Image 1 (cartoon, one colour):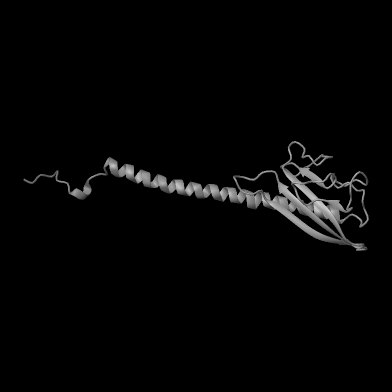
Image 2: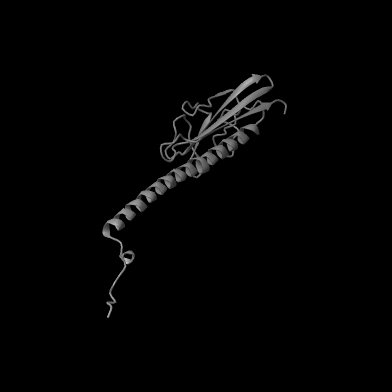
Length: 173
């Protein structure tokens, strides 16, 4: 009689070495995918969320400034709603450089977009967004208003998202 326990060579199981090599290959692929996921997450947070918020907050400040009358030099737009005194209105001055804020032409927001009280060019504790603005007189009837918003820090080692808006304000319109 023939023996029934004969196995062909292609029915043998995997060796320990083959299992270890396949785990190493899968680990290398997974590590590559995880690094791509980390880059995607960083880009999405910086360019999707933070950049959108800086643009939105710059636009909010620009709208707040452009509703003031052409000759307003006293409204305080560092508070919301703006008060009629204690500020600079849209008087010529300020700086559009976040590294060189000018008193009266800068305000700060927390991470949720809430306005923080600040009467100096020094950022208050807990600030996350900074807005600075500059008003330049181009003629007796035309002013340029420039607003720059920047986030305090970005995710990863990327450049901080910044948004700058420029608009003209004319008199009498």
